[in-house]
Image (cartoon, rainbow, N blue to C red; front, side, top):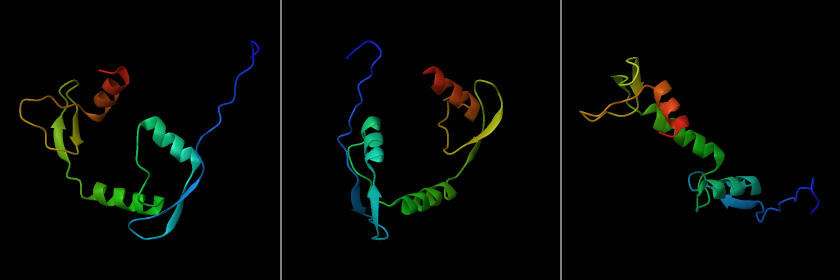
Length: 104
């Protein structure tokens, strides 16, 4: 390769037709989605079609019980989707997101 050239990386993935375990419909698992799964370290292919995945996620979210907390970092009131253990600090969404970005 010359100085300014970049080499194109070819994908080893090709679209696959899968069958949803919930509704039984076929859906396409695209090469791009497969590459994304691999980058995230996921070993298994999806077992549900996008519609059933969305429906299942919505069901889980609607059944979630929220608990009111006071952030141990900034003192702001917020809600979290779990019951905190006694003696452990709990962060509000903003402080939690900030901590994740910093890597701490």
